[in-house]
Length: 595
Image (cartoon, rainbow, N blue to C red; front, top):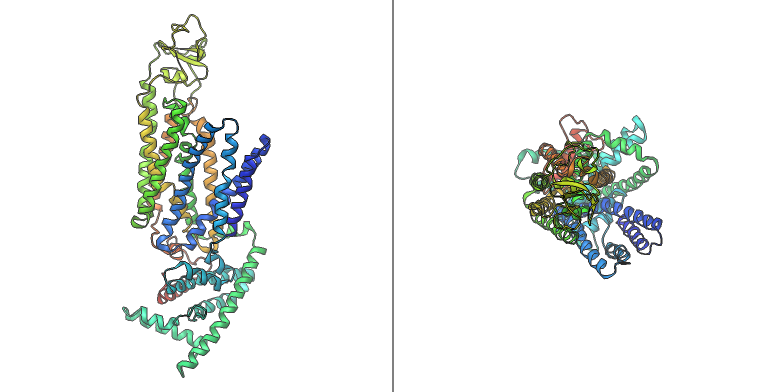
């Protein structure tokens, strides 16, 4: 929560700084400050939503976050266009300064929202976590069960940290934490202020497992063993409950105090590099991180931000004039907003995996179709009568990587700076006409002289169609769901670090793709159609990879999702428990009605 508040404050400062910028340097500084705010918000907001939301609503709420981002991009484009028309000299200041308004609203809104319950448990504030869960869950029983599940995971993390702290002599810490974890499953929560009372877990195990005699026997034996380990007696029901409450209160307070100490130990003695190394050595987390970072890379390398950032330029490449291209780029962004709306409706009905595979399939087809529209625009433009390499005519050829570079069409000619087409010839000139008086086209014949673009492109609307198709398909899953999936696939112990790495991967990919698009789409490298075919090929490879690598996480708790990345060869759980011990904890979770 406080990281998001800080991000909002940083963004506001940066936006105001850009609005009042007095020099180019101050404008760049403001942009850097805004970038820091965006980075913090894009990292923490999906995590916060995933940790506070109910499992059945988690995907929808994280996707709504993506929807609002897309809608914000569209709204910003429309507002910027209007402000530019209202004040051509200072409109840019208003555009940049007004960005502080949504960040101020976000700051005020988060003042009234609770802290993440999982973070509260990690720092030993379980009572506060319970109050948060009671407010955001549909029933008290559900809140209680989820708190137990979170505390089980945190106690395992504590055991691992303590064991590491004493090197190989810390087995007693491990045993103590496992015992605390067992006892924690037996305690009662008495919330006198709210008149809430919960039954103890040995009662719950009998109530919730009546369908399976073997499970009943196992749970009975398990509970009996733990009662013995705590020195509980069964002389009378009253004395048993009193003893259990006293013991459990002691163990709960001790465990929470230990967790506070553990949190301090982590923050003071565990360096970033050590934690990163530990995370990468943990096989399940490494698999999840490969999937999460891979999806972020795929999201960017499939070209989304080239389309968002350079939509107007792409439409100009398709033959539309500048004004038409600007408004087309704004309105086609609505296609992505529509796609995200569809995603919100379907994500908890159909699941993450089907939506991602469906989205990526049509993203691939749309990119291939978009590239084809540019290729057809080239070969359908007026041809050069005698195309050949002429060293005396700069417009007869150009550097090329994937084609011969000889000017063969009007499309090739007008893509070169300072070259124009007329009557089957490509020659040097400007908007007014050719420089060479001996050209077959006279300077006065404006209808025949074509400069910077070739007349009417009959495939221009094909480009519009595939742009809309691309944005719609991308919005259905590849836009919002990589953020949703990254917010839910990592273990609690490594969640913040893993999401920060995947977010950094996304922004690095964003930078690389946006910085290289104009170069890649130039005739000297891949040409415009070659660039989109490259993005389409990346999307196709990603589709095949995700078909085998992406699991379904719909309706699962964050702790259950963690289990999806375990393999038979993994000997330990998230933080050091053996498979048998993990089974013990899992049995308690089921016996307690946990999800």
